[in-house]
Image 1: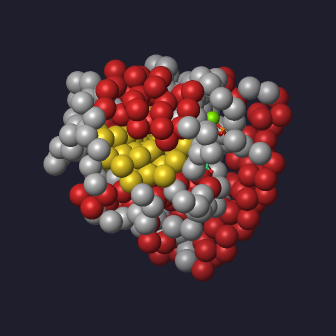
Image 2 (image 1 turned 30 degrees about the vertical axis):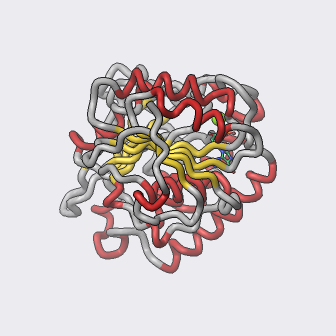
Image 3 (image 1 turned 90 degrees about the vertical axis):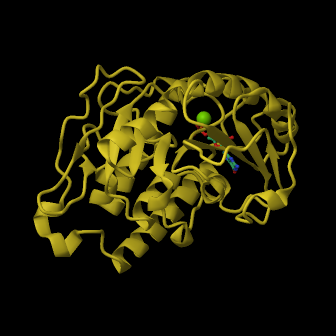
Length: 317
Ligand SMILES: Nc1nc2c(ncn2[C@@H]2O[C@H](COP(=O)(O)OP(=O)(O)O)[C@@H](O)[C@H]2O)c(=O)[nH]1
Ligand SMILES: [Mg+2]
């Protein structure tokens, strides 16, 4: 049964109208954050697959941050009560910061110790959702990135050669502009990751458009990172919202992050010297299929931090 609860029951972390569906357990294991823009044809399949992936398991909530002009919000509201987790729907009055702004708003609302950020179009396999925080907990890291470019991951669903070239170029550009903090990720453009909510500095976040992972890693200075390979699938329904305009936003975002990085040196940078640099380590300690762990973490001597090593710095989504 669907229970539509008043906005005031949730801490006021968003100025946008929110609707909450379903029972709300006091203890949650994971908050799944899904940014949506015109994804009506994907919502039911996504919720169905999330339901299969998250049952049994720790209690979960799914938070949709919606900037749609189609009936995505109505589809979510109609479907929300049919699943064994609570669903939160935020309909933004203005799409501030685009995809990245939506993700940060969702992270602000997350009530669980771990948040998993994923797309609505099923390019990110829901079956991997519980696995990412589990790897984070056992590897004792703050961020687990699902990667298409290491340890058996695949960019199969990226589609055209043009998308693959854009993906590779934007990854290379990120690493060139942002140095080792981007280079420690084999897939810095990934939109599929789990993050320990207590490790985030969302007060410092200034998201612009698609590349929200880099934004979080740099502004929150996340250095304890693991990676899990997966196969990026083709879209279930609807069309990509990635446009050349997003490319321009991405360049602006890189400049902003580079400027911020220059003002505040990376964690453990000068103070830790060469020992703090992330080491290259093999990621694929699992068989490399979706769902297998590849927590390529390493603690630089003396730093007390862990970082994933890049296997194949290479692309974007
Ligand atoms: N809230 C919100 N979600 C967005 C926006 N742009 C894209 N998305 C969502 O972000 C996810 C990734 O977008 P998609 O178009 O699939 O990008 P692609 O995978 O790079 O082609 C999908 O769930 C989209 O609906 C936006 O401006 N606002
Ligand atoms: Mg997509």
